[in-house]
Each structure stands twice: as structure tokens, then as C-alpha cells.
Image (cartoon, rainbow, N blue to C red; front, top):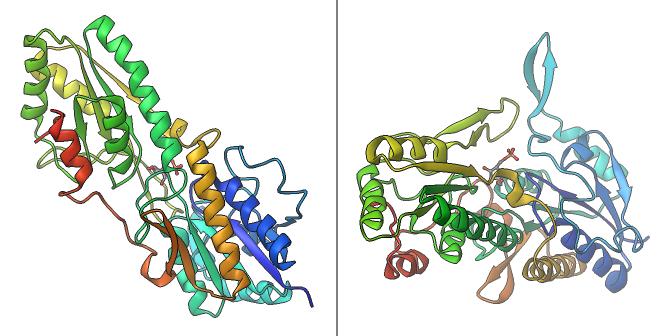
Length: 361
Ligand code: F6P
């Protein structure tokens, strides 16, 4: 009987998901004659039995497209499925039904493309006996045991271009311009975009900023005749002894907190303290939209082919990863539910500081 494998995309979308779906499917079909079934909307596809046949033709022409042809969800979780009863949310365990469905479909394994949340759910499914191969996705670049996730390079490119554009209007109006960058509790995206965009100040979730230091740097630049400053600030940044700014709480999401708004708060604080005029731009979901960069298309394709090769060898319960320039694989159980933040001794922080960029301390 022909081998059959399922594939899903979980968590927030990011550029390069389609490139992975294409690479996994084409490679499995061409190299191993394995049939591929896609599940729609992440783990919801397994709960609600929503599938699509990923034939060779179905995955053709999607390499360069943004989003995911399968749809995704950062709420779907077979172990904690939210249902509304009398206006209240209740959680039920659907994992046994999902397991029965996988058996019914005669699937040999699942390829789960996602971030730390998806890997955490994958780990639980592995414990129930479902063979899984993971592929690390996120613009945040915060997944353990991989040097880089696909989607990150595209988001860095978008954020750096935004900082470039903010530069010209900042110069013209002699303003302090704040650009808020996504990344949750990890500052990789802000750090890279800030360096690439030549930000004067870079504020990360990993380093609580000192408002006086930030204000002094802006004033110092003004005194020296540079009458504008660019601040790249992570959505997860916070002042010493202060709190992160929460934009919303999503009750039925495993990770309920959504960050956002620190650029507006900090802009007001700087204006109050220095009298300098500020404006804030929150880049938001722009950073996840559109076509992946060539780098991400290549990385996503390498990941997809490597994931298919693991399936081909029946080497399950591992996530493909990048170490240096090599594609390797690591146990999924070591990845899920953890956040890889920027270490304080990161060479990238050193690089930023060496060219005079302030890290806000
Ligand atoms: O994890 C990716 C990410 O874009 C984060 O950078 C951001 O904090 C979060 O997802 C936003 O989530 P949502 O799409 O649910 O608003």
C-alpha cells in the first residue's frame, strides 16, 4: 500500500510557508512516491476533518506566494479545544478523536510546520504515538536549537526598508521617529532590522531601557546638529522597573498576550522629557505579509526537502534545523514551549554598539 503523510501549518503565518509545503510535497511525491494530504487551518484541520489533496499540480506555482495555501490558526489545539457554552469558554480534549482520524486516514506521519507552540503540541502528539517531523517557522527567529527560522529574513527586509523610509521623513521634519518591530519576547528581528536600517537607538525585550539614556542620546544628537533620531523598538521592550505594553488578551489562544504599543508610549515619554517632537509607527502584520525573499525561499526549500528526507527514512519526531550553513535535525521534545532570546553577549549587540548605536542603557 502507498505510504501517506499529512502536512499542516500552525501558529501565525509567515512568508515561506508555501515554499515549505511545495518542497515537502514535491520531494515526497518525486523521491518516495508518497501521497500527501494537507490539513486546513493548522490543528483545526485534524479536529474538524478538513483536508486537501496536495498533488504535484496543487503545490505548483506557490513558491513565491505569501501566507499559507492551507490556512493556519494560533488557537487550534487538539488537547485544549475551546468551545463556547452559555457565553463562556470551555476546553475539551479532542486528542483521542484526532488520533482515531489519523488512523482512519491511514497516515504514517505528520509534517508540522510551525513555531514553539506548534512544536509543543507536536511533542504531546508524539507522546500519543503520532510520528511527526517538524519544520521551524516564525518571523521572530526565537525557536530553540536552530540558528534561523524561515520567514525571519523577509521580516528583517520589510522592517529595514520601513526604517529607511522613516529616515527621510525624520530628516525632513527633524523628529524623533520610533519604529515598533514585532518579535514577542525576542529581539532578533528588531536587532537585525535596526542594524540594517542604521537606527540610532535599538531597544530589545532582553535589555530594559533607561528612559534618561534614550532621551540624552536624542538630545545629544540634536546638539551635534543631527536634528533627528531613529529608534527601532521591539514590541516586547520595556523600561527599567516598567511593564511591557499589552495590546490585547486573546482568551482562547494558548499564548493569550499580544504585545504592541510601546513605540507610542515611549514616543510620548520622550516628547514630555525632552520637548523634541516624536512620531511612532507600529509595523505590525506588514512584517508577516507578502512574498518571501530569495533567501527565505531557499531556506524553506532546504527545510522542506530535509523534512521529506526524514519522512523517507522514517526518522521521526525530529525538527529540521539550521546549524551554521548545515541543515541538521533535533528532537522535537527539546524545542516546544521554549523561547530563544538574544543573549546579552550576542556578537550582533556588540556590532551595533561598536558603530555607536545605543541599546538604551
Ligand atoms: O510570532 C509571530 C508574531 O507575529 C509576533 O511577532 C507577534 O507578537 C504575534 O505573532 C502577533 O500575533 P497575532 O497574529 O495573533 O496578532
